[in-house]
Length: 201
Ligand SMILES: [Zn+2]
Image 1 (cartoon, rainbow, N blue to C red):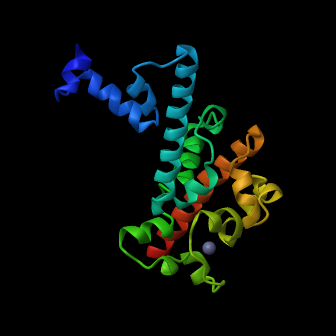
Image 2 (tube, rainbow, N blue to C red; image 1 turned 180 degrees about the vertical axis):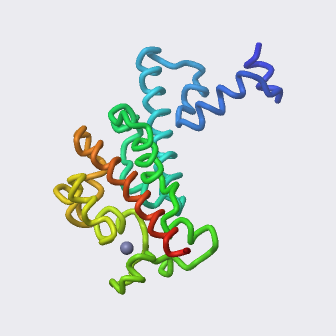
């Protein structure tokens, strides 16, 4: 009956099923009003929905400039190991915010006040007359000398020696690496805050 009503232009549950089948490329099921082997169909349909959702998710994070860094390090749609590995809540939150660029590094604070990307520089490096660098996640993790001894304490420089290692490093599932990374980021953010507040005094 629903099918008959749909065929005379009345939108109902059957219409929604038709739209779903068309959206996921199963028009033939609607045309024939038959799925063939139901187990095979359900398995194919389920996989198609998963694939399309992963594709949409990738596309959404790739087209959002705020998520440039996250898009680089997040390749799989699955829960991250760090969420269950890091016991210290402050460290876990710090790593989580770092990964999704929800922090106050100049690359993000500059975005909020429309500073050109290339002018979002690290104040410490500017003041110390080091080569001017955009203050982003990579700068904090690998290059900025403000955090040199923290990198040693947290073993960051053992695994993340250059830009080329950053993605692999942040995708690591090694518990020691995950915990040390979060400890480094938490303490580096605190050190940065202290440094900037002293500049204002
Ligand atoms: Zn710096």
